[in-house]
Amino acid sequence: MDCYVMTLFPDMIRSGLGTSIIGRAIEDGRIYLEAVNIRDYTASKHGKTDDYPYGGGAGMVMQAQPIYDCYQAIRKRLADAPRVVYLTPQGQVFNQEMARELAVEKSLVFLCGHYEGVDERVLDEIVTDHVSIGDFVLTGGELPAMCMIDAISRMIPGVLHNDESAEGDSLSDGLLEYPQYSRPEVWNGRQVPPILLSGDHAKVDAWRREQSLIRTAERRPDLLEKAAVSPKEREFIRNYLAKRREV
Ligand code: ADE
Image 1 (cartoon, helix red, strand yellow):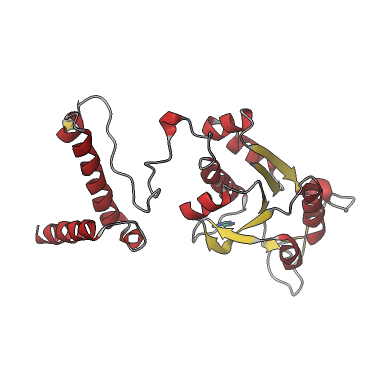
Image 2 (cartoon, rainbow, N blue to C red):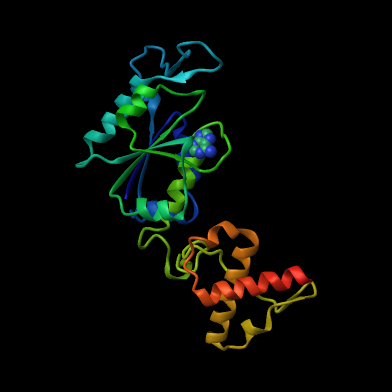
């Protein structure tokens, strides 16, 4: 996949995504990442990319021209029109399903805003998706773009190696992942659940599934509505919660 990030802070993107698993995928050529500096496309002699808002108000607005020309320079290099994601708290809230959906695209373009916003006319002209990473306001779109690129990249075949598989991930089936334990068997007086040491794979799988159901019911009950959970499992959750209320 080819990812282009239009930003005023390209170093932030390069350093944020240059290490660990995504850094390795970039090095291996599974992902092409280019942080494109919007300032390089301004027609202003002084390198200006923002101006006062019409109608007054606080802060500055990123101007249309540098963003549009930056986008056109990227567009010219691609065979097909890419999806263009504008990071904004006003967008649809990003989730795992969206990550999976975007991971099949050949190229993606991200637009990172700053200051009070971006001239609406250039958004109307180029943006296909308005996306938020949650109901809070950050100072710019760079961190949200990096979050999205990380989550999307690990859905691309070959980016995760076998021992890093995304299969058992939290949210891969709409549920939270079960708890994990590693050596030693006893740490700080706390024992690893004995079933994990039993060597009985069917029992371990069943225990993990139960733990996923319990965890999701306790921490993110909102997820249960849409998760792939059988009627029997729903009954298990009801019984578990009823018992917990008795205690
Ligand atoms: N820009 C500022 N805050 C944001 C958020 N929560 N999501 C996406 N982009 C943003």
